[in-house]
Length: 439
Image 1 (spheres, helix red, strand yellow):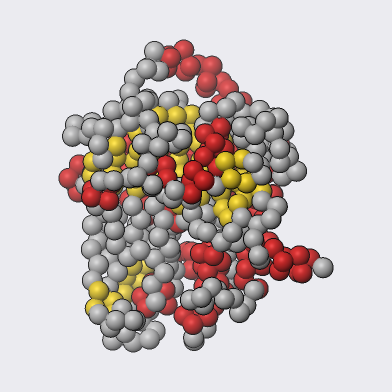
Image 2: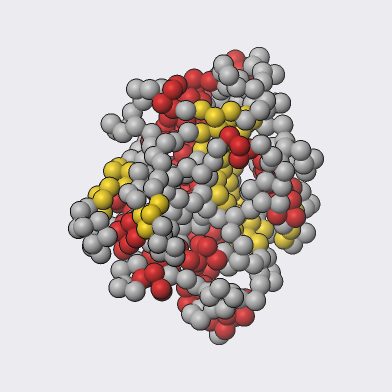
C-alpha cells in the first residue's frame, strides 16, 4: 500500500512532462528576467516597496523584532532593526540559484531573550555583494563554479526559526531582565520566504533549472521551501542541497520549542503538518519520493562543531546554568564531554543512511573534520573526499542524468564524476572516540 502511494506522484509527473514539454521547448533560450530595475549586478528588493499590502496568515515580512538586549560581555545595550529585504542578480543563462542564509535559531526564553543563539536582525546590505571573490558559489569569477552563469536570489535570515515560522511568539521573562513583562519574537521566516516566492513568480521567466539551497539554518529553509518552489515552477528542473543542516535534535525542542514557530509545511505532501516525531530524514525521504525527477542531497562534515553545539543547547537549555553547559569545546578547542559529539555523529549518519536506503534520487556527501558549512567558503573548491571534489560532485548533481545504483552501500560510481554517495573514511581525530564507543 505504501509503495502504491508513492507511485502516484511518479505517474502524475510523467503525464505532466509529456503534456508540457513541447510547449515549453520554445522558451528554452530565454534568459531569466527579474523585472524593472534589475541587471546583471546585485539588486536589493524591499517588500515594503514592491508589495506594500503583502501578508501571509495575517503577518507582514519582518525580522525578529528582538527587544533591546544587554551584551553579556560588554554590558552595552543593543537594539535591533526589524527591516527585511532580499537580493537578486540576473545570470547569463536561464538557470537560477535560490539561497537561504543561515544564522542559528531560538525557541526558548533562554536563547531568544537572554543568551542569543540566532541572528536577530538582517546583516546583509547591497555592499555585502560588492566583492564575492572567495565566497564559494557566489564567486562567479571562478571557472570551477558550476553556477558562474546562473542567476541568484539571496534570502537573508533574521527570524530564529530556520525560515519555517509564521508566528509572533510570546516568551516569558523568567529572569526578570524585562521587569517580568513577556517579550515577543517575530518568527516570520516563512512569511519572508512567501514574499520572495511571490516576487519570483511575478518576475522570473521560465528558469530551466532551479537550485534550491542554504547553509546551516538556511538548509532547513531550503528543504521546506523546495516543494513550494517546484509547485510554482512545475516546468523547471528543481534541485535541493542542504549544507550543514542534518536535523539532529533533542530535549524540549522536539516537544515544545519548535512549536513556538508555527512551522509551515506543504500540506499536500505532509497533511498532518509538523509533528513531535518529524525528522529531517522523513522530510527528505518524503520530498524525494514526491518529486521523482528532482535530485536532493545533503553535505556535512563528520564532526560539525556548530551542529554539535546546537544539539548540546537542546539538551541543556532548561538547566539553571544552561549557557555554561552549551559549549562543546573551550577556547583552545579542548573537549571535556565527548557524549554530544558521539550522539550527534551517530544520529547524523543514521539519518543519511536511512534516506539513501529508501530513495533513489538522494545523495549525501560527508567530509572529514569539524567545519560548519561550505557553500559560501573557498572550501567549496578545495574539499575532496575519496577522490571526489565537492564542486564537481555538485556540478554532476545539476548536470548528469539520474541513473545508477543507489543506497548507502553504493559509494563509488562508474567514474568519479558521477553523482553518488560520498563518505570520508578517515574523518578526523574524533574517529577514535567512535571506534571506542563501538567496542
